[in-house]
Image (cartoon, rainbow, N blue to C red; front, side, top):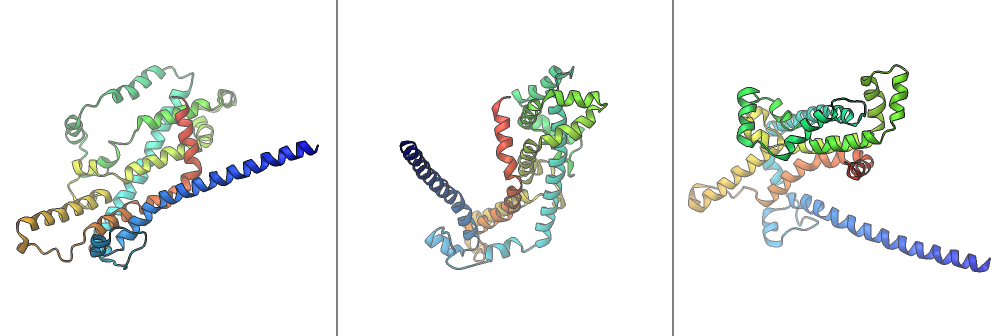
Length: 303
């Protein structure tokens, strides 16, 4: 008994030492991941001269709101861009998840007779791209997706990789559960809405977060299809603002006396734009975190 007790205590001590090293490793890793974000926030509140002389630091040498003052010089424009981005993110995420979940549910059901045809229809376009010019002609000349919010929602509504993730999760649900519901008189719509979706919260939350992140960072379709300033999303508005500043800096090289950039922010403005752009998504991520890991793991197990 004494030998067994000694052996158990030795094993327990080894596990405790291992656990301590594992915790230390992840603490250091978390600090390494957090420091860049803190540095970006610090740089956004720093003076441009301090950044040029001393570089980036975790804490600003002197708090300076010049970058944010320049960024919010026209608050109506920022608020309007936020509203447009929130609308396309909410609508695009909701309808995207809904349509992709419906398609994935059909592909996962063994009694669906058109599985091969739908699979070919969904996955064949992923082998090659028609190119920007044909898609631009179709969206503008035939679908009339110009200067409206649908131009920012429809072109990137479906993601084939997300359909694969959803189909994989639906396939892991017990078929007997669907058969029992069918025997009780439930329709396919009822089974999908009341059984399949509630049991698939991890992968639904994962796909919703990835889709929302894509819609929040939308700027390419805005550059192609949006002409009105009232429909410009946040990311494209910030990009245009940065391009205008770069144009002024380039003009100063050729005509220094004609351009005054003494009050024009530089690197701190870029950091302030990052904070404004990623801030809301960083606040929403913790609500998806408990589902995110499980959903990504399930989608990567088998296709």
